[in-house]
Figure 1 (tube, rainbow over the protein chains, first blue to last red):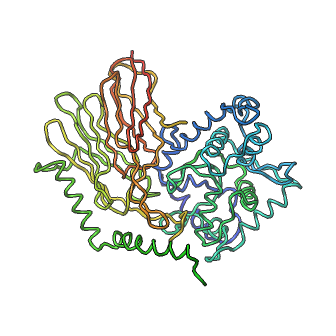
Figure 2 (cartoon, chains in turn purple, yellow, blue):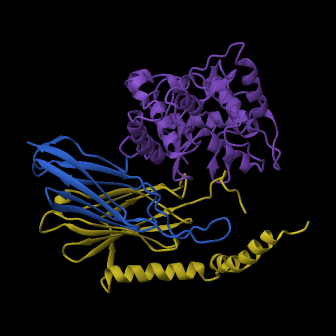
Length: 258
Length: 158
Length: 106
């Protein structure tokens, strides 16, 4: 780390504890910046990033025919490198039929059920992770772009409420760690600002690729709260809020994190 | 609270399983046994030959992000010619359940005697890399690594 | 399903030392972990990785449970001639994966 970077980091640590409240846009940092040089190097090189194993699986699944309609993703969407560019950066988006926002995993399953006439892929299954990682990869380097309007505002507000609500036996709110104490250490780990810039990501703790939902469940268990069920609307509302909070930050999928 | 028959059977089965696990984890000689295993592995590799410090460069982060996946690289100074090359590179630990981590067999075709990989470290400890040369000599390097437990675990602490 | 990925430069000069990076998808179950009720999860790891260059072995690795899941093995080899690098991973429970990469040497 150069002296300049060290001084900036030290200054940011002083500011981080300065008081409760949202992180000013100029101080937003991806979890990437808080990792060691070695772990960053793993993420930067496609040849060493284990997340790429899932991305390649997703690439194969993209062209595989599925369901009663016997159709592959490629049949409608063509080359993902063009058609899927920017998609992950915009999700969760509002789904008119359901009347609420859906995340990328849900969007993929909606396509599976309605267009491919195939059963939904189980959340956290290898296939769904692979497809989500492959689609997410096509937005790598693009800024997160969540647009809020009258339809999505109530869900954003619900997500924001969850972020600020004290939960669990430890009676902690997400904001207390991730807004007020980012950059400081919890046990041996550095507390990140919790921007979901790289999901699904390879977590060294999992020794595998996992979704944002899985990570949020880990957090809830960490504060001794009952985690919501997989696919619960609370998770999608929280994801909408976290992505909106990270607007403008670059997508890193598939990221690597401790 | 009344225990159901099913719960009782599970608890009874666990009461046999848990002492085994507890014994392994509470073994007061754990550190000493693992250190002895490390010495034994070292002896197995070098025999009676003295191991010299130098020519080997072992790189590990001094504080890991996560003990499950610690980036490790070894590089050995050697011309890597037929006459003078590295034959084997070993990596050992003192506090893991097993002392051996990885062994590499190579020769002049490698061009450079290197290995880059990711390893699991069970605890804060010293990691050792040993290079066996074509002339039968052994060279080594060690690195100290601090390993901490992750803050937010999936299963929580039971 | 992607079981292994290898990265080798497509072209090299004769005698040049090239970097090879390999990734294999594998949980590398150590055999030391236990389930929530205390049962030992059996060991299931990749035991050996080897790389041959036009049939001659140039690099061989013996892996132990201390190697991380989805193991990365990166090394170097001398670009001696045009041909094929063949990679093999062999492990417990009949695990066996091969990959190849071509290299053009002028």
